[in-house]
Length: 432
Image (tube, rainbow, N blue to C red; front, side):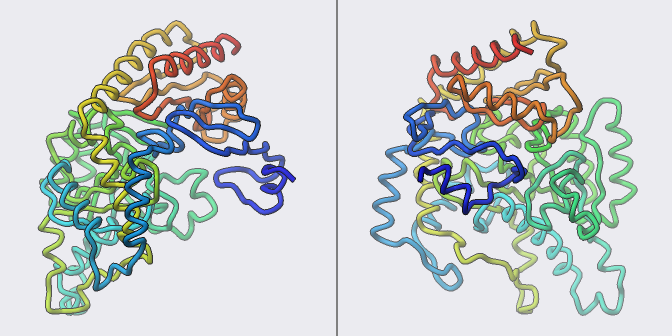
């Protein structure tokens, strides 16, 4: 029995309708940008396997570092213990993060990194207004509302779903999610109204969580940095904690190390995952400023941040992140990223010849996206499977978000491979 037949009997695949599910492709190995199936056919991984493999697959340097660490320390509880990979990674991350961050809190994926941020910001206000006083004066508990963007996606755990857009991802659970104040991303037409809304609710807002400049799973929606700065200025003015969800945008995706590097106003909390380990192992990071951290320094044990995971700061994951960071900060990697950015811009200009078949062509850093003008603009648009099938038959792996087609390749992609991806996409558009 081959891999696919065995899979059909035991596996439940994510984000995939189970009835009449297209057969998955059995991948046996991968190298750099290429995935290889059981029959030996290769596919260019043009989306970095859900945006994580920034250095490509089976990177030898990261693998060697993991091997050495596995022989030394593979796992240890992180309450009451520490270890070199966790400390070294925090020491390397803090100076390069976009803001004045003081502490690193580890978790195990993107959803949990945002979950940590939400809990951390809410408890900040709970700690700040002593719980003993709250029982006497309930007004001290008023900073309990989270501000978030429409079309946001921050993960699949309950807190993360609550601050995400009410969509197909959250529909069965909507009555169970906590209330959030949602606003649109800023435009020239709505910026003054958005600022007014924030000011009107300032006494109740604990934190503002946002995906800086690019909303990922919501459809690779891009918005203006100067207007976002205005919005963040308003939040800062009213002492609203700013949480940047850079799970997708971090580690070079937008052309800068972090999307928040485009902004004058920096976050108070930042969430990281995906490219953090080069896609090798799961790891989440939530970094906070000294002001946030100091709210937890107390003789009162009830002000402890009671949160953690069995695999918090896993030594192997931290080691992979350290190795990935070393590669990312090298000059040749920065040049490779810049080349992708420039090629995307040129191809985006060429794509304009295919309007009105496609619309809303946009590009930021190593991310290029557009919508196919067929059916509704939504995640359940059936054109997604057509695109994936067509491109896979021609050796390119893409997984559109409904009718939103996007490219987010590993930084190691060659010029010829990138041109192949462009050619296959162009061939697809000619068939529409």
